Structure formats: C-alpha cells, structure tokens
Length: 402
Image 1 (tube, rainbow, N blue to C red):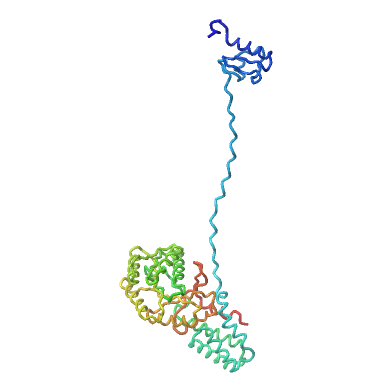
Image 2 (tube, one colour):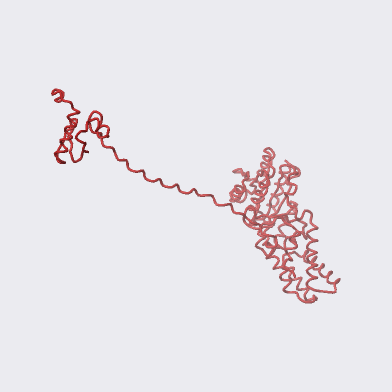
C-alpha cells in the first residue's frame, strides 16, 4: 500500500534493495515482497538484475515472492528380492528288483544248501541229506516227494551221479510243476479290456498278511492302466480297517465305497457292485475281514458275501485272490487250502517275498493245490507289485548253480 501511495515501482525497488544488501555484507537483512530474510542465506544477484531476471533464474516467482524450498525426497529403499518358490520334490521312482534278487534268500536256503552239502558222487547218504534240505525249504511233503522221485530216476539213468545231474533233474521238475498249473504266470489283467464290466474281485486272507496294502497296490495298478476302480470296504469287523483302506485308496487315487454304520459285509459288497454297474466302473475290489482259517463261522460269512454278489452277476466274483505272507511258509499252504475249500480260489498273491527265505511255498502251492501265483509283493511302494513269471522263478532258484 505504501509503495502504491508513493507511486514507486516495486520491481525496480526490489532490484535496488538486492544490490544494496550485497554491498552491506552478510549480516544485513532485506525485505522482498514484504518478507524479511538474511543476506547470508539468500543467493546474490548482480546489481543490474531485475525481478524478471530473478524469476527466470528460478529464485523468485513472477510476482517477486521467493519460491518455496523444494522438499527433499528420500531415496526409495531397494526392494527385497522375492524368496525362491519352493519346488515340489521329485516323485520317488521305484525300481522293481529282478526276481533273481527277490529270491536271493530263498535260493540260499534251497539250492545254496544243496551245493554246500552234496559233493562228489551222489550216494544214499547224500540223497537222505537232500531230502532233509527239501523238507526244510517249505515246499510241502507232496512237492518234496515229486522232486526226490525225479532226482532218483535221473540218477539211475546217468552214469555220472553228480551234483550237476541233481541240478538238472530238480530244475526240470520245478518247471514241470509250475507249467502244470492253469493260468500260472497269467495275471488277472491279461485281456482285461475284453472282460465283462464291472470286474468284481474278492480279496481274502488272514489278518496281518498285508491284504489292505495289496488292495491299494492292485487299485493303483488297475488305475495306471486306465481302469475306473472302486474299492469296497467290506471288512466291517476291524475298527481300523476302513480308515487304512481309505489311506491306500487316496494314494491310488481311486474311489472307495465305505458307508458309515453298515456292519453287514454282504450289504457293503452288494451296494458297491450295484453302484459300480450303474456308474460304469471297470473294476470293484472287495476287501473282506481277515479271518483265521480255523474260524468256521467267519468263513461262512465269506460264502454269504459271494452269494450276495452273485445276485447281481451270476459269474461274480470273477477273481477270488488270497493274500499270503511268504514268511509263514507251510502255514500259508494250510490257509490257502481252507480258503480254497470255501471259495474256490483263482490265484494267490505272496507278500514280503523280497525279504524271505521261504519262497519255495510258491512251488508247494502249485504242486499241492494247483493254485497259480499271480503276483509277488516286493516292497512297500505303490508300484512294488510284480507279476509272477514261472520261467524266471525256476531260473532264479538255481542261479548260483555251477
């Protein structure tokens, strides 16, 4: 207001004031646009500078007021690198052992003992020793008799009564026994695509032989071949049976039929097969309660399950497979005999074959009951189930022979 009354130009006055302040020193004060400032903190302008020139240099706004100080922006903190995304572990690859390796313990207790005990020319004393070894190899009395008869007959025809003659005779008779069993070495999956749908398989056996595990492996094997699989939890007597079967069914990625509160195994089997027929399943695996072969009342329950299934399909069950622990030796043969009387078994699955010295029971089962071995369990992995090959089995028993 005062400048306007005195008719003074504020821009010229600001330039003159800046020049005067430069001459007075750093302790002087100046007034620009009505604001007080210190010469020591101001940037000096040449004496002939005008307000327009100051504005052009960025020190003042066009109206003569000093520009506000710029705020200093702190530098951005460096971004933390993203933690590496954890990769899922590579799937475990199970390499099935050869039958030669699987039967190592059996071979050592069978042919290995014969090699160490019989030398030179074979005489009557060594024949007795051979008989003792055969009886302790879990072959069964009928099988032992057949093998001894074959050896004695062969020795009587050969001038050279040596261990090589014994080996040739035993190996030949073992092959003959296995070849004489219908479907020996033929798994239930042979020609599976041409079979009636759904296939219904009953899985039986006593407690503790690995029945639940074997059902899981069968389901996995069938599913890997493209079959639509259902597992029926027919063991309604054992509290943990259904939960264990559910675990294996999940691992095999197949359907499980386990109705809550149903205690009748026949009802479970009937409903499972009926559902499988309606929904287009290829295979139904029916678990059954583990029964001692000496419990007649429980064995009768198995007959009932079979009768109930046949109401839906007179040809069912299309396979009745018994699961046997190879370590049980001659007891496995007795179990198979009792179950066969009740159900007419179509095949046997031996578990724990990779860790036993009693694999000769396969030969005993074939010779005594004419029941084919269809699978061997060779580990705990889902893939640790291998089809039985009678030729490989025979070769593996005598692999270490000279």
